[in-house]
Length: 403
Ligand SMILES: *Cc1c(COP(=O)(O)O)cnc(C)c1O
Image (tube, rainbow, N blue to C red; front, side, top):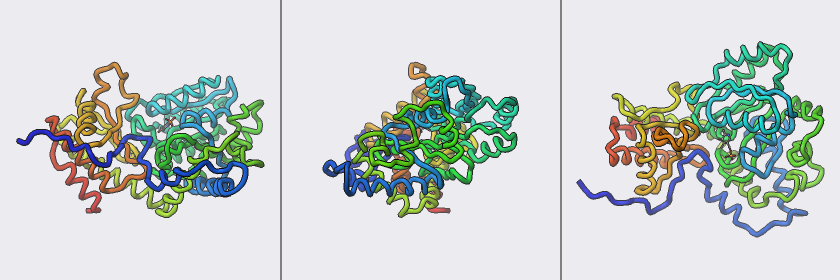
């Protein structure tokens, strides 16, 4: 047996579920002197971002840009349609669903949470019952999460629309696509989503700092009937600006916009259908490797049992604690590979916390990166003597090869 030797020098790979890997072309587009915000190229370029964002969201309706992270996008969306004392329904399938509900609570909403736990998708029948019980139509919006990044579950948003229509409930359907946009198929208009929120730092491949709220005419009418909306969060001027500064409620996030322009060019050059297919194939390779390692009662487990409900952007896993943390540390120190911590699955002080970890595979990720990540994990399982069925990487390679 040879001695351990760190192999961490070289280009590092940040395989956490956001922020994601930033393409060099995006970094280079951002590396420029401060542009004029009163006239010239920046103003013309910004106008081109909106239609290209809408193409990715698959909507013909409106989009507003905010200088904030995903939490800010939640607050922005809610501030436009939910007044204090109004009721929202939150079908939660992980930490982010809970968090969106908490954000609504902070704005004074009455929040009904249906908690589906940490490893299951939404149960549409239970949501149907809750909506049916609301004869008075007090629920003004349903706050759903498309991909919950903590559990890595992917929910059926089109199915949720069908349930709302089925019971004839007028609530707005609001979808959090912060983890999924540009990774998992999402069709805002075809799926009947009224409001969609996303951020720039996951599938859109831009450093954290800007977020987006997409809204249709039904949501705009709800906004118009609000007694009051905070000036800064108001999506009205942002979605339909008469002056350039109104896109942002103030100074533009100049360099971010250039980074976003390049990222959108990359996505459209590849084609969104291909982007989705790439994420799906890479996710299938990852699942196959993990399922192989966990065979014969090894301790490695995928958090979401059913492939139909797994995200193509992030995979949540568990080992016997503290092996999850040990594996993350090993690949970090020895291979220059950073895996994601478990989030919301156990309290940080709980020993169980050290069993959970996640793989981010969103955005600027290709076959050799995923095979490298999987090879790194297999090396770590081997080095740490974690019981596992060998052959995970070979099985993943067959998926990548399409065999
Ligand atoms: C990342 C994420 C958020 C939070 O975004 P921040 O930019 O960290 O505020 C919310 N919801 C989902 C589904 C996410 O993946």
